[in-house]
Amino acid sequence: MNTDPRDLAGRPVIVGAGIAGLMTALELAPEPVVLLSAAPLGGEASSPLAQGGLAAAVGSDDSPELHLADTLAAGDGLCDEAVVRRIVEAAPQAIERLERLGVGFDRAPDGSIALGLEAAHSRRRIVHAGGDATGRELVRALVAAVRRTPSITVLEGIAARRLIVEDGTIAGVLAADAEGAVTLATGRVVLATGGVGGLFRDTTNPLGCFGQGLALAARAGAELADLEFVQFHPTALDTPVRPMRLVSEAVRGEGAVLVDETGRRFLADLQGAELGTRDAVARGVFRHLGRGHKVFLDTRACLGSRFAARFPAIDAFCREAGIDPALDPIPVRPAAHYHMGGVAVDGEGRSTVPGLWACGEVASTGLHGANRLASNSLTEAVVAAGWVADGIRNAPSRHVAQAETAQAPVRPDASLVRGIVSQALGVLRDGDGLRQAAAALLPLATGAGADADPAAVGLVMAVAALGREESRGAHCRTDHPTRSGVARRSKLTLDAALQIAAELDFTPLARSA
Image 1 (spheres, rainbow, N blue to C red):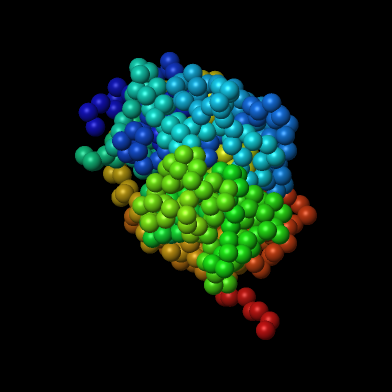
Image 2 (cartoon, one colour):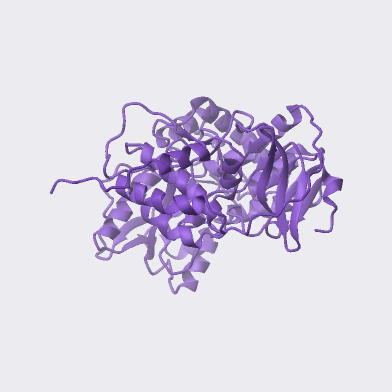
């Protein structure tokens, strides 16, 4: 690290440089801030992989009220309606803000913004760029904007390992680079670290996205919410490549259908068919695979030779795998894609630990409920970045002394945890599997090895899933298949989860023949 950390003392520190982190830094300008990026800026985040786009009611036949209704329906009773309303009403202005920052959205022949359709949306409202390269275009434009903003100090190749907490309040960030540990003294930290897909074998997320921000927040004592709700995308390209390539929901929005090896459209009777909610489609695909079938996304009739022009990135990686979508059905399977749960935050992104905010996928704002509506996540990241910036500006200033740099924990590695989490917290769960996962994760989470932080995240997720004895949204318990009459969000701290796990009876439940 060439910059002296003492010169940066007191500045807000943003951990993570995907769309949520980049936008938060830009929204805070001209206040001096520090942006930590574990990889070169714009690399290794989930944001550049986003294909679909941003959901916003900008069409002449659309309205925030319709967007609100679709979001609440997908969230299966767990959305915070006030939060949803704030975000859907702000979404059109967010699109305008991104355009001013240099994002080039796709246009229709008449010059208006082109709008796509995705599952469970009642209108075409998906604003996209580069066909299926929206995330990449957003990151390109926002990185360029950050680079030209003098108030933003970017520290690349530096990863946060722990939050420093004094008297229950944030006092700094203990980080590490190639040369060793680094301490940044600050009373204001924003987590913008993305999701947990890297805890699963089948995932569309970079394998390094294992919930680092959740681990930082949890070990600092923050409350976490709804961690049991993991969204599995129904149509990831079924090849050995990891992370798995995503075949965007927008492809189904253009009329593609799911078929098996016999050509049968096996989800035709599902409500909404291929454009049903993601949880329902993912379960349908998962169960069909479990019966020994293969599953394909067939685009030949709806797109045919036009596929490459509409979805150039998907066409390219299909061809790398020897598949021509114009002529061949695309083999697919569900993969961990998005985490509805996260750090519990209020309307300005504040966590329960003073001085700690969260933005983007790592945060649980109440927008997504039990099942995220497609393309609401990028919209949330852009809108919520403004809330977080306002919260930081309104926070009382506090002097924080530069602490001695302690030894940073070892670089985390989710390899050992991945099999445990994949088995217990997949598309379908049950109590025995969740208890076994908690038993396996507990000693790892309380240890000091490279698997400690990934195991801690997996443990809290397993305990949350064990406590939700119902099936709702993306959380499907085969031993509790019905939905409870009362919708409740789950809240947990790491200490509470460790105590619950230590007291669990790991004896499998007896089942009748």
